[in-house]
Picture 1 (cartoon, rainbow, N blue to C red):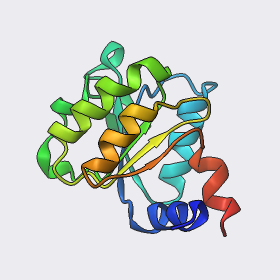
Picture 2 (cartoon, rainbow, N blue to C red; picture 1 turned 90 degrees about the vertical axis):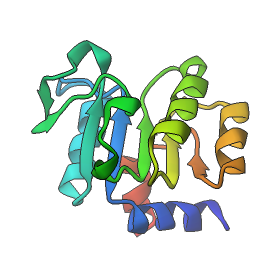
Picture 3 (cartoon, rainbow, N blue to C red; picture 1 turned 135 degrees about the vertical axis):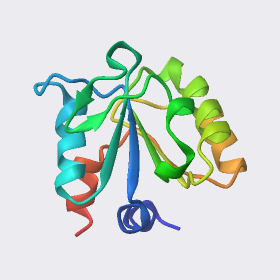
Length: 139
């Protein structure tokens, strides 16, 4: 599958997205991307331990992926963390999210070993891309 086909599949099949590292500050890229995703009809679940229990974009913030209820149906994780934090996020996602299909790493975020581990577990992985840029680009 080409990268464009992969992104199109994610765009069309994802419905609930956990955004790891979502900031409550509207000037931050994570907030802008999450708001874009909501405007496209996706449910966004914020994950940020520093703001757990608060609301961002009308959704309750969870401290980590493991705290999201199983029935939330998270099928994509969008990672707004440094690349060195990716392995622990991927490990937790693989363990805690029964409906997970996709792992997305934002611009500048990559981790080959974590991506390979997720792919070996049957997940589709995108690295160093932004859905706010890629979804409109593929039409």
